Length: 360
Image (cartoon, one colour):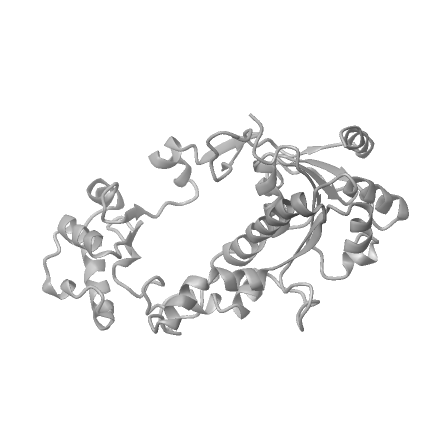
């Protein structure tokens, strides 16, 4: 069955990280995504973020290549580019000529710093963008340096995912107005937005500027990871009083020091005592005691273990495409269920232009 974005055409200018991730989300939901790559760029089935779309090679430095790109853009609904500000303009493919050819086009721009501002033209990566947004400062252990959370927060959460939201919102609006627009998606902005919940806590005086001392940053003894007897780890998130009570009951914790759950002054000591408790059994033994209960428990699984977990297998959270194990599309749709991912594939520019013109 076609996905919910069947019939939506997307032109993606090849890049790394958040742009391809955004295009992958759209392709997963049924959009027809065409990836424009430099000549000589191989199709890589192991680059999971390029799945479920076709790739054509175009030399954008010449007039012929620019004309070919504009011909495709004229038949597209969405465009995704992730170059530094000004690059697309120098190629003759900035918003003005593209919207002149296709007034309904939604033109998505993915950058770290945004299209304007003092840092707009500087190089950077996820770690830099989340640093000035306040998020990186909050991640890590008390008294230790901030810890980069891979590149989930800037590239993918604050970047590619929010670009997808902006593109789809503007596509919906274009359906009413008949007019496209430009989406300026900056990872600095997106990361700040992802921090809205914490800024809410801070406004209430419930979140300090110190790492590892707060409710959700590992400061609380009931919201952290703990080593087990076999050196593997478990994750505990028993915030609500009833869940905290169940955790204590199942673990046999009767020490009255644990009664004042939200007394932050006791958290360091209670973390030490809880660590002693969890070191008494292996991770599997804790799974047998706690998993599936209201103790808010989960084993900390590695990349090999996660696809084999019973819950992930039951939900088909992981899948294979072209022999490559990868996360399955999300979220799930009850009716317009998208097709399963397929490996990326090379396509002919001329054949693609002919097909798009025929179906326009």
